[in-house]
Length: 117
Image 1 (cartoon, rainbow, N blue to C red):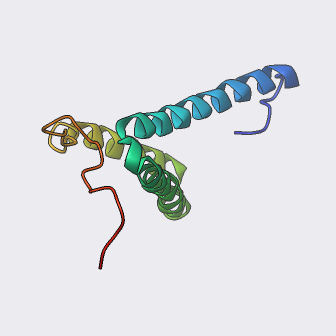
Image 2: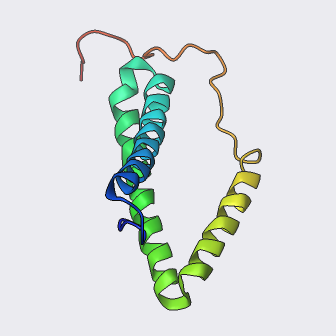
């Protein structure tokens, strides 16, 4: 909620919202850094573009979904549903692990030199 609570000074509300903003920045920075460090150097740009597209696309679709549910069923139902979906999603993590590279060498395997047709 972006409005100060009744009887709360504006400086307290500013600090509270500042901490929330710092949390969002830390989370998003960590996700982008993990994508950057996990990608091979020769494909890093593509990996970051796909990662960023997926991240912000998911945020937009999630906002639309839960906003629609909150409008139709109420905020309490939407937040309860989001909490249940979060717990179920956490339970699926072991089943859908990311595959690791077998050889561990993710260098570019294409031949370097002029392209001949």
